[in-house]
Image 1: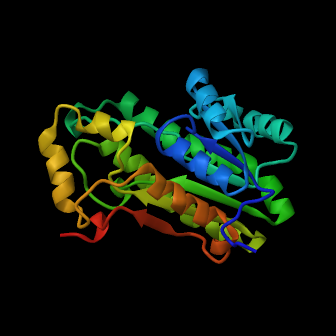
Image 2 (image 1 turned 60 degrees about the vertical axis):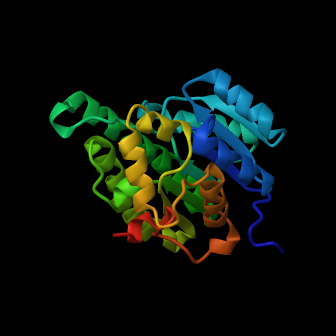
Image 3 (image 1 turned 90 degrees about the horizontal axis):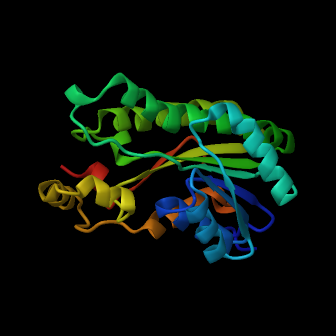
Length: 252
């Protein structure tokens, strides 16, 4: 048996229509899982699902509307024929702004999407996983969970909160064989990164200077880590924050 295969698994991936979410959806489907992607905009989801193939479908859902999380799990179960065994909490956005100019509303929006939304969805999917004693929940954290990065105070707070949540959920759910982990991507060549670098070449230069491998990561670097952490190959891995960052978190 190939321990990296995901045959008979059902994976729900938020923010799966573009960027890192789409890369993860592709690789997880290639590993054999049935994949359901979600997001707010239907057309990118439809295009993404079509590009992945017959193992993929989509549901339009706003992660910030956390009161609808249980409904999303019900829809996923109806669409796939069984409840999800893999959840990847990926949906999110960034806010590049000095702390002094960041409003309470902007800060709250960041927390609602990254923290409350992902917690509500994890809580909604967990009962069936716990009942079956089988499941993997993965959060996409950030290098901002580990490092002080200027002009992203709300994003850093939200991504740092995920790390604490992962540890507590892992402690509570791992005795029932439901593993909870997080990936901390470094700077990955993606639409979100391009937006962060827009009009700020000095920032882009600093990023490369701080990255020991001296280049940006690719979405597949995160996708391959997600396949591993969701697979039987990682059956004894839980409560971890797994940096995939070209060495950023260990650099001077």
